[in-house]
Image (cartoon, rainbow over the protein chains, first blue to last red):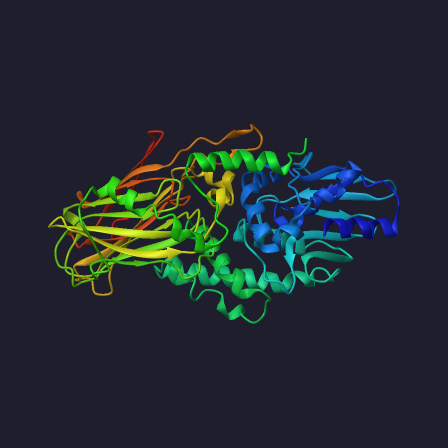
Length: 233
Length: 274
């Protein structure tokens, strides 16, 4: 995957690859880093990315090997960021400025978003899922707050972490906002009724079934995470 | 400087080995390493244990979604009339297989279904066990197989900074039964605590985050002991317990929690009507 991305870049330009930006810690967004080692780039990420990835490294490697097989996994490697972003930062690529913004805990605790200021294109990483069910590995309240903040912005297009290459903004956020709001509402109600975590995982958010790909794989996990967060309210 | 995969894998694996944790690719390999006989002997000596005799029921999800947060519920059916001495929970393949020992007191209640629920970390495909000790000193066990693997990451909180900010925050709830005259009531205790297992590598210091976890939880109803729990880091981050107790006069629940650093946290339920 990383190699394919590098090849695709090389079809368009032979300019040096100076930066590799990771939007967050998940394996499908960081394991490609190794393909760019030959370019000796600066690896850029949220300032909490290194800690998050470091503590998960072993299980990510084990799980990815099992899922992909040794052959497909070959060459994958965890490379931690060499540049941690704590405050909004502009990278100037020469007549092309990229705005990097670290987000508070939402999809994960290390989400970084990128705006290409020249074309006013937002790269939201996995803060935006389309078709593929959103996966919650941070904070549901935090994620909904980030969506609220983002939806006030103006952008000519948005690139989701999973979904089509380009989408209209801010409409693209709506299905995800609906899903997360539904889960939040149902889980809050289960907690108010004194239900347990396992009881909540059997009912909460099931009105969203059929509206997302991979619902069966991730939904119960999302409800579990939401419950463990919201029961503290 | 980029940390190559090998270095990280080795550091994490070393801690894992120290805790006698093995990485298995297939659940089929499990049968060859039955560590239960050893565990059993260490904990209960040569005392006989009745298996699946209906005195205790263990519930676990069929499919584990998050190995860091696996709900386990133990039920003692109403057909069991007498008092309960203790309950011990095990996850055979965890670095510390003994999850918790719960010793019950005079306010435990009788005359209905009793239950105890918590959430645990599961590090590998493993059996979970609940061993119940009844008043007459006999032991009864229920077992469930958990298909879950988390590696070191199963021990990782989603938002460690937010959790540390609230460390020690304790919530105690009482759930009156539909019929308030019922002899068995239920309650809940939850505490914000990382329950660190000492296996997390802090990438900024290249050192392992020291183990720090909830050691004892003492729960009283109107001043009388419901149970005392001795726990390990197999209990999930932000430990959470649902339990039953015998109906009392006020039904106020008081909790004292002590962690391995000697920090003491206290909580109590809101008195009725407030």
